[in-house]
Image (cartoon, rainbow, N blue to C red; front, side):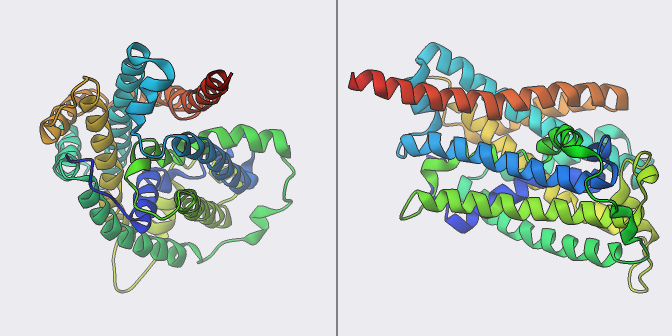
Length: 365
């Protein structure tokens, strides 16, 4: 069976990081500075802390059923009819994540690099690469993610070098003037940038470790690295742009890369955006894989045609993405996705954890 292959702790860390980090790298901290301005880095940090809290919830849920898959203990907690419905919703949620990541980065590619390339070609290329990788086993996908993580490190070095040019540290002062309420408001859009850790719901029983607490440590390390990376980008952007400029520049990192002059490489922004495609693909193929696994578990007898399910979901996502070239439609779709994300990765796991605790207490009585 394709899901029975175990992955190591290091592979789990790589999976989480490459799934969390996506197209938001180029836009942070635009959406996160609507209320906080130059204090946007605080909102980014708070978003990472909130993600860590949700990780504790998901870990607590998995720890109660260490040898069972998510689908198996889901049916035990809420019963099969409701469990099948929730399982299907998770499949749709993962498929929707694939679509939102693809159209978000396709929009960036279309506006900054591939001006004349048809939209259908860009989204088709992204789905084709992702579906091919997602057809593999979890262990194979983890191995690919380890290689992709090397590109993340290289891109991080490029960001640091390009961002530490001419800027002004006074852009950060005075610190904290916008208030804690504004910081919390802007931490909400930041939270969507951290999604990806919910993959633990599925992979928990397939991680090879001596003690389950190692999984929590691995997830915390991965989320911590992503948080530091996002905070670093926010600091670099605020260092380069004033508060008034942050209000108008939707992809500040692109401008920083574009204005940087390096005698070895021309158009560093184009080099970065094209290199980052591999990281975006890592996010998409992980969600494609998860969506296929959730669909496979809907029936009592698991569907063994994993590759077929991946390609069917990939084609389904491609068709929808073809109709999302309009930016206004894309924004509306993103708003719906954000609400659904909160329900699927915060509300439902929390209720499942509380439900499992109540069932255990009732059983003891």
